[in-house]
Length: 341
Figure (cartoon, rainbow, N blue to C red):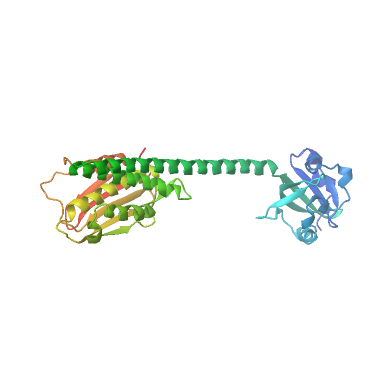
């Protein structure tokens, strides 16, 4: 036969010194014991609470349902958290509510079945969480504003170059200014994509390409009706340190394909493909079915600023660039995330 222990024997001499609030409730729902921390937590003395229903310590809106929960607790044989997954509240003597976490432990004693409740006051933790949440929200607002301002500043530079191009009669200079505008637009769109995003650490590259490439083909006039651009981005998201170099590389290689790959009103397709190879490695490729790159052209020593930029940005990404000259012409860049500064 199971021995019924005395409650005071079960609680022991350390009951009052335990650094958590503890309350014992009998099967009638009356408070029979509480320690000193429980007194200070709820603002009552022991004499004010002993013999009173435990519902005095919970908000009124929970009073109707609580007796049924309490009877269920008495039928338990194992300790467990109370109200797991729900926000629980305690009620102080002054009428103020505070968030709590409650652990219950049914006890069979010589005085009958009882429930030992351990109550943690979560007020300080909740306040800390709120402070952290507020700080994160402020950080998000600041980052959003930074991306917005960077985007606006780049658009101002874009407009200034546009004014300069309109005033110039040198076609070669105008072409160089237009190329610079396209590069600035690429960087601006990265910041615009982040500004419109809920995640300021990752650029939705599919969305970025969807904004950039139609504008890029429009910049080359009649080519927009002859060349189709196929975007295959596979929902790739890149950190900004990788997104900006990749955006510029796409800008340069697609521009080169539009300018040099299709001549005499030749129709064709440019494919921009970016995909994860594994958790850390990404492959970006730009290919076209145009006329290809002549074998005699040394791509490592070319005078083209665009290809020089592509090589420079590849080094910045610590990537590897493979080139296929024709059928199709293809530039394939592989790099690891988180390596570039």
